[in-house]
Each structure stands twice: as structure tokens, then as C-alpha cells.
Length: 225
Image (cartoon, rainbow, N blue to C red; front, side, top):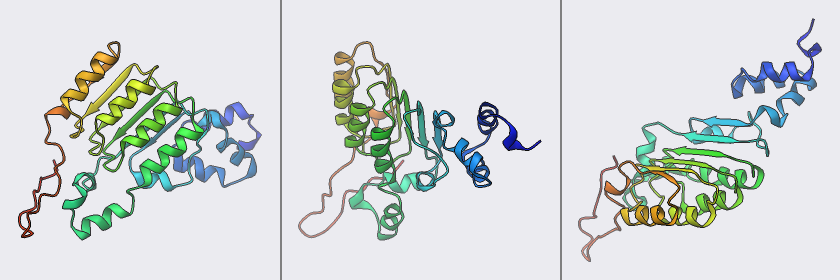
């Protein structure tokens, strides 16, 4: 008996035990398995451990997506979290390879995955408020948003939650240094039923502007945590 002799339900069940790369490899063996690979029912959950994984073609984005996680735990996260004006040319070169990946991917998700329920983003140093606002505005069913160590997010993301996050029940903004206590207090008053967690965010040192004096001395530097 061949694998392709199994019915669609059995094939989907088998595929469900495989990771993205192995699903893709199986799909390249024949047309029948390629159809299974592209079945939206197989892709309700997506997890990525690096922004570079977002460039691969080993997954499918569709309205079936319910849970998405992009969690980058790497030494390069520290480079991404350095303020742009304080980066060396080498550090800028590292960031140039991926600095638009997460934002662009979320823009695509917001257009193609309106039924998203849960979104987790960790270590996404180039993520900006505009794309959080976009995902909240277009994925109106979102009920869980977890953000950790996303250095460029500010209180504008909290304002977007107040405006667009009508179905949001859980919001975590941990280790986001540009989230302020004032912003947290405001969202707490605006959305009293929201389960809000903000470990260390308001206690961290926020970004500082380039404060070089007229003689070009002493840029105000901060060490990325």
C-alpha cells in the first residue's frame, strides 16, 4: 500500500506530526502530497524561531491561521535593539539583511489571515507600532497579543489596542523599553477588563536621541541589555 492510497483525512493527520521543512519535502514527491501541503487546515498554527525563516516557502498563509509566534532568541537580537544612530557600520550591515522581514510579514498576515486569534512576537527589534496597529485593525478577532523585547514599540501600540483591540483579552508587553508607565496606566483605565502584563517595560531606560554637541563630542550611548 502506498502512502498516497490513504484518504485526505489520513494524509492530513500524518502531515500534522511533521515540522514545516519535512512537510515541504514530502510535498515535493508527488502532486497528491503537494495538494495536502497546501490544504489550509494544516496551517492553523505557525511558529518561527528566526525572521529569516519568514523568507522560506515551507508554509502556507491562509484564513485558517489561528495562532502565530515569531520568537527570535539570538545574540543578534541585541544588535537589533541598539538605537540606529548608535550602531556601527558592521551592526547596520547585520540589520540590513532582515530589518524589514517581520514588518512585511505582519502586513501580509493582516491581509490574508483575518481569523487570527493569538499573536506572539519576541525579540523582534525592528517591529514598529504601525504594523501592530495594522494587525489589530484587520485581525479583529485577535484575543491574545504577547510582545517581548520589541525595542521600537512605544505607547502608540497601546493606543492601537484601545482603538482596535475590542476583542483582545490578554496583552503582554514585557521588556519593551519604550513603553511608559503613563501609557500602561492609560490602557488600564481605557480597557479595565484587559489582562495586562508589563514586566520591566516601564522600568527600562527608553531610547535617547543623538546628543552630540557642536564639537561632535560624546554621543549619548546606551548598552543594549
